[in-house]
Image 1: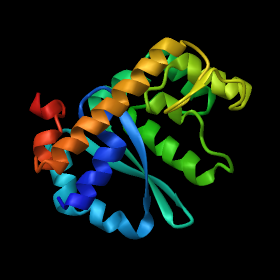
Image 2: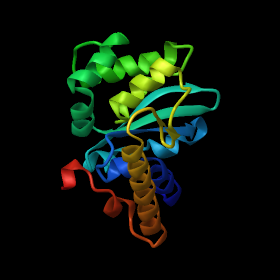
Image 3: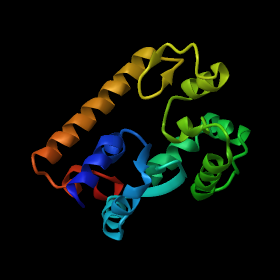
Image 4: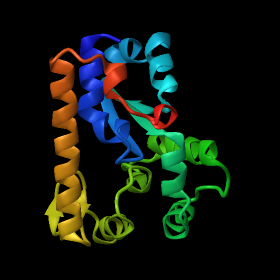
Length: 187
C-alpha cells in the first residue's frame, strides 16, 4: 500500500482499524479511487477483516464506507437502532441488504441520509436528536452533533483523535500500514 493511501485511510479510519468504532465514511476525490481500491489494497484490508463499499459519488468526490463486518452488525442490529433504520424503509434482512439500502439512499435521496449515524456507531439518542431537531439545537459538535450525553461524547471524540494521532505517528515513523491496523482477523 502506498504511503499516501495509508495516510488517507489512517486519517479517516483509525478508530475503525483499532476496533473502537464500527465504520467510517470517507470522502475521496473520485480520481483517487483507483489508487485506494486496488486489488492489493483491498486484499490487505480484507486480510485484517475490513471491507470498503462505495456509497455513491457527488461532483468529483466518492463516498466510501470502511467497516469491520462483525462490529457493524453488532452495532446496527440492536433493537432501538434497527427500529430507526426500519422507519427509513430498511429491510429486516442481513447486513448486505442494509448496506445496499444505504447505498441506494445515498444515490436517490435529495438530502444526505442522516440515519448514517446508526452505521457509524453514533449514540442512538444523538441520531434521534439530530433527526428531530434537523441538525440544530445540539449541545456539542465534534465528530457528530451531540444531543444526549455530552461527557461521553467528548471522551469519545478525544479517544478518536488520540487514536488517529498515534496511528499516523507510527506511519510517519516507518511502521507499515499492515502492522498498525489491528482488525478482527488478527486479534
